[in-house]
Length: 462
Image (cartoon, rainbow, N blue to C red; front, side, top):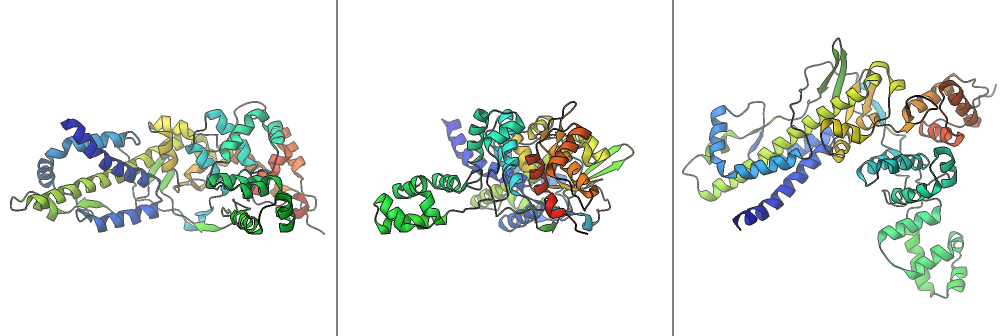
């Protein structure tokens, strides 16, 4: 019974602290600094400084905390489940890259959907199917190709595409993946969890009348009161007709990398950018106070509790940095050809591969690669950039979608400006030169992602 009580007492604390540790994984560098500053404000045991606690002070602190050893061990074991414990190499002093080269486009809708697929219950084959669906979702959030067209391009049967589309339609933003406005509104209505028979009848049976704002026609067709129909109209109009429009890839921002990868004679040197991340230590004053026999029991209990929180917070930050380093190291190993030769050598990679290599859960890799950037010999990239999906070639290893888009960009840069290449012509060149077999619609989709206009719009008149 005693052990049962201890478990019940410890569980809420562990849950709260584990949640904190997991949250730290996915924070950007700026958010991490803010979280540290906030924790220092709330916990008097924590101080910012480079000086470490002496060995004697640490031993005294350890003796005073002997009674919490079992709890600490259990918490550490739980923490080990989602991040590794190997040592990582801290960042050495190096010349930072030119900030003018640290330009990226903001996170777009398709990136957001891929990220969610990585965290959701999609099996490996469903993820491949989902990628084909996501590639055909436009910036407003609509599926621009029919499932029959996607089936023809991808080779997946419609019967397999349909259930995966339904799973994609459950992702955020609500309404994404709809094939038309009617389906978009129904998806948002279903997600709201409300039941309104009048609204349902208007959307399902009289949507054309609604689109033409034909209130009289709906009153006549349904027999509902004007008040109920007007109320339903207002609810329908509250739904977002373009759920993807809040995700833009047009804005430019400057970023500072979290990781530096530098080529040396011995290979690639990986270093974390720990600049601006405060060094934390325990307050000497409170460590001495907790060993003072004159201090009352309630005060000691409070200090010990804050010491345990401080230890966990410091450990969580160390685990975050350790996990970030090991994931970066794994990415460099998997994508070594990219670091040697550039974008054309980027290979398809999935979160699961890195997770197994590092020895953590797939969700941990997804979290630690969120809002983190790597400086490479070929530019600064978000860590998620190194997990491109694949396109099968006629022969040989599959290519990443990034490589195919790079080919398309190169073709268009070299084209005759008076007679730009059509999407069909680009698809033909990809097939003939690189044995890459993709449809015209896929070329058009990649061209739109690259913000390249159609051939007609690119024509330069003499």
